[in-house]
Image (cartoon, rainbow over the protein chains, first blue to last red):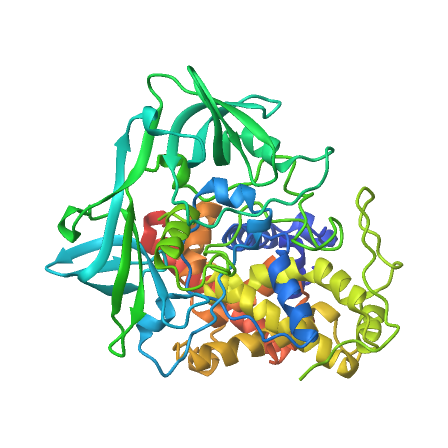
Amino acid sequence: MMAHLTMEELAACANGAPGRDHLAACEACQAEVRRWQVVAEGVRQAAPAYLPPPQPLRHALAAIDGAPVRRRRVGLLSAAAAVVLAGTAAYALGTADRAVDPSRPVTVAAVYSTDCPDLKVAAGKLTSVSGSTMVLTTAGGMSITVRAGVGTKITHQVTGDLGELAEGTHVMVRGEGTEAGDTIRARQVAITPDAMKLPGLPNLGDRFNVTRRMAANGTVMGSVIRDGQDGFTVRAGDGTEVRVVTTTSTRLIKQESTVLGGLQTGEYTVAVGALEDDGTLSARTVQQNALTDEAGRHAPALPSGLRDRLPEPGEGLRDLPPLPDAPPEGLSDDLFDGLGCDADAIAGTAVYGAGA
Amino acid sequence: MNSSRPDGARQAVVTFDSHPVEPREQDDPQLLQAIARGDRGALVTLYQRHAGAVLAHLTLVTGDHGLSEEVLQDTMLAVWRGAGSYRSLSSVRSWIIAIARRQARDRLRRRRVTMVGQESLAERAATGPGPEDIALDRAKAGEVAEAIKALGVPHREVLGLVFGTGLTLAETATALEIPVGTVKSRLAAARAALARAMTERGYA
């Protein structure tokens, strides 16, 4: 009788290779192959093959050119699909850490750096509020204690009236878009802070209009330029105009001042302020995003058809691997670039650029 | 250190409409030779070929996708700097994974994350089919996948390399820097641990 299959052969069979003749006649080996196949399938489910994301290569190439090696920031789940969609651009969503110092308290690893040396960003679900302190828990499960003082500006989302919209108001609209991407039937209109950094949209010419593709998927961000009886028009960052149709069920969301006790636990909250030596954050601004609908809470997804075609900023379309199905967790590593020390703008950008 | 490519080295070709244009079909060792000469396009091609598998493996081992991307980034940088040291004694993929393992180990050490040391795992051989194998016979792949995530790092590593990345046992041994015999015993021990886990989940 021929020898049983070796471990090498069993593994190869579990990976789909045909076995030698002995296998057909040996029930014991067949059973072993089946068991290894179960293991192999489990491994493939536990570690699905990824399309290689562009960021590691992009950062490695930048480092080759002498740029500092990028380090991740502990992840927060970016969920405002609009921003992510816009960020073809924002595909640069990464988990970079510009400021993790192993000698600092662990809290350091749970905040984001900004252009401003004195301002860090903590973001996550509001876990608890006690007196003038609150605790945020990041998507990565880290807890950060945030202290509010007399001068801390605290806002949260409330519903408003569509009549409050005026020309020039910055909005993020979500709803159902037409196939052409020229009109959205709005489910929700959120007034975004004027200081918020809008995503830069690549201008790829008439053949590939990102704003239209976003709108076809139900999202547009930009400024209100015309108002009408049944809606308004939004001009996006690339100049494309999208008609927004509103109905009686369309909800308007805006930010309104509140106090620490007015915030809801369990909701996505952003705090911007100074990181103290004890690892707590002394907040200058706190904003809570409690009314964004479920669309904003899901992992962002690029519209079908875009995934394999979008470029990195400043790059051609085909010189890097295709995008993965889902961006990794984390705020964009350049999300706060250019915002300087404007705490409100940083907080607003984080609120509308990420969700819990 | 600025290790930018030498003058005249070729860039990746970029076009809008067409499929990705690789300079020309090259096998992996040729790509490494090109990288050693400072060819960035070759690095891009190598990345396209292997990064997905390396990232999947790193994620399985570390359980942290973000960290794994960072390790992958460091790995590609190390490949750029060390391509000239490649000797064709192993497959390029196993060579890259070996680099990735060292990068991950260094990174985790810096973060002071405690991993189960390989040495602490008994390299037990399987005891042959038994009641626990019945659990494996009945188990569903999704349940097995969950149980795999709970295994120790050495077990996840060997399973990931053999069944996720598709390396041969010899290539796995190279990547893990252990003898082939140890790969075999570790595979058997990993499966036994998995079978025990499935038994505990009621599959016996």
